[in-house]
Every structure is written in C-alpha cells, then in structure tokens.
Amino acid sequence: MPLYVYSITATNHPRHLDGVSGVGSESAPLRTVTAGPLCAIVSDISEEIRPKRRDLAAHQEVQERLMADGVVLPLQFGYVAPDDLAVSQALESNAEGYLNALERLESCAEYHVRASQADEAPLLRQILEDVPEAKDLNDRIRAGDQDPNLPLALGELVAGEARARQEALAAGLTEALLPFSRDHLARTASGSDFLNLSLLVPEEHTQAFRTAQANLAREIGGGVELRFSGPLPPYSFV
Image (cartoon, rainbow, N blue to C red; front, top):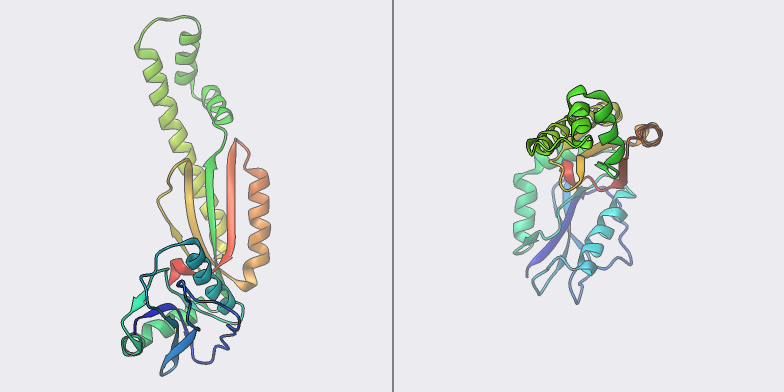
C-alpha cells in the first residue's frame, strides 16, 4: 500500500504523536518504518494527496510535535513511497547522510527573515537628497522643464539607486544575523521583498537572535518592514 512519508528521526526519538491526525480524507494512524538507527514516520494512504489546507496543517503538526521532543528531518509536503520496503531501502541506502543531517540539526530550528519596502516615500526622499544628479533632474521637472527625457532619466536613476541601497541593506541585515546561525540560505526575493533569508539557529543562540532581530526592526526605519517567522521545522536544511 502507498505510504505518505512525513519525516525521518533516529530510532531513539520518543515520537509522541498521540492524537495527531495524518493526511488524507480518511487519515490512517501514524506509524513508523525502521531501518537500523533510523525510522520514518508514515501513514497509509488510499488517495492522491493534494496541498489542501487540512492536509498541509496535518503535515506541519507532525513536524512540530516531533520537534518538541528532539531532532527531526522534515520532508517537504507531498512525499509518497510505494510501500514499506521502499522506505526502509531508502533509509538504509542513505543512512550516513541522514545521520549526519540529524547531527547537524541537533537542537536547531529554522527562522525566516524577509524585508520589504513597505513605504517608498522615505527612500525616494533620501535619494533625492543624497544624489545631486537626481535632485537636479527632479528640480528641472518641478520647475516646468518640458524635456520628455527627464522623467525617464529620473526614474531610471532613482530605480537603480533604490535597488543598490536595498541590496546593501539586505547584505547588512544578513551579516548582522549570521553570527547567531549554524547555517543559512539566501533565496531570490520576490514581489516587494528584497531579502528572503532562512537561518538555522541553535537553541543556545535563540535569545540573542531574538534580541538582535528586535533591535534591527526598531532601528531599520526608512519605510522598511522586517518580518521574522519561527521557530520552524528546518525544511531548508535537510
């Protein structure tokens, strides 16, 4: 029977999952498939599992319950295996890598840091004050200069300067937070975001990390919004 696979732990993990429901419209009980020092947390399925809200929540609850009692390798939503044998073979063939990952993630959680330009006005004002060429172009436009190239030139100049400043700010924020992490992953930001950073933070650094993020959020200014989320299962570092 096909299995939905949630995560991998060491066999000595307590795996307190009483009362936790699995994925699927008729969720089967959670159970484990063991191979040597490793086990996978699974449940039997009889349907295609799609990313519905209920199933996403069930998948996440399993990870969070496991994290509360020890280190876990959380699999991304949607991992399905054909049967128990396939799962045990995967555990056996990749045992060294899984054990190394469990050791690396011991007592760690993932935190996400995102930054966006929530209000562009302070940044634009600062650019017009700091960049003489931008100020000159803006003054000419406001004075009634009808040159049709002026708005385009000003727009390109301001956009390039804004992008450079956001990139510098993203680099500075990353540099300020890296000392609290064991590993990090910087992803391409999308939408209005200019920073999308995942950090693997050891438990002993959590309080210092939270203090640093609060200080950064207070000091950042300039219409920038910082968004922190976590602790989360370390999906990005499995």
